Length: 242
Image (cartoon, rainbow, N blue to C red):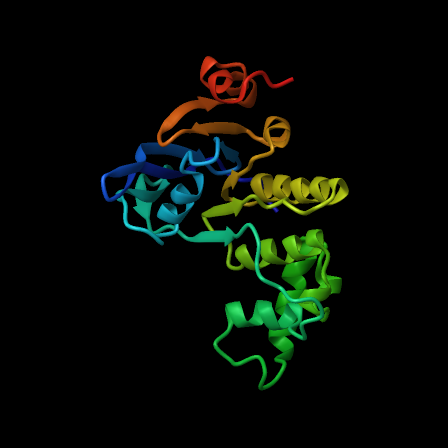
């Protein structure tokens, strides 16, 4: 598989959100190139979740989101994959990974029959994330790391232009976190994909991000992790980061 070409860019242009007279986001503009992991950080109430909802089209906002093919200099309709912070899963629920995945990619009710072609297609895609052995396992029996692999697999079928990850490693142990970031590294280097990750874990952001966005209703600082974490803007909000 060829590495990402670097010739595509997701442009978040002047996103603004108001609820009544309260400004939640103000003129947020971010350019995210394919093959990059952009981590958004900020204190509680900084507007991180609101920004994700605006990008996903779940709330009213000003501004726009565009996917630009720089090679041909054209703007295309953006395809977005999304992995939420958590999903409500009851322990030992009978729904399998296949059931969940198939319900997202096919219009055939999964309770009617198991389609062999779809089963093979899903298993091959899960294999990319080391999760093919989970295909017939109940969702409720998955560990946090296993569930995260499955959700990322679903979010990348078909391959999106932009992958959004909302606090994706909460509740996952350190080994699971390392596995997760290996998967993200593979996605950003081997697929033509931009990745946004919202995180409260500043150490992980410092270690894995290509670019960090410090948000506080607007973009306060952006750049390489070491530049953002050493900035006065960061220190005013979080203090010193070792």
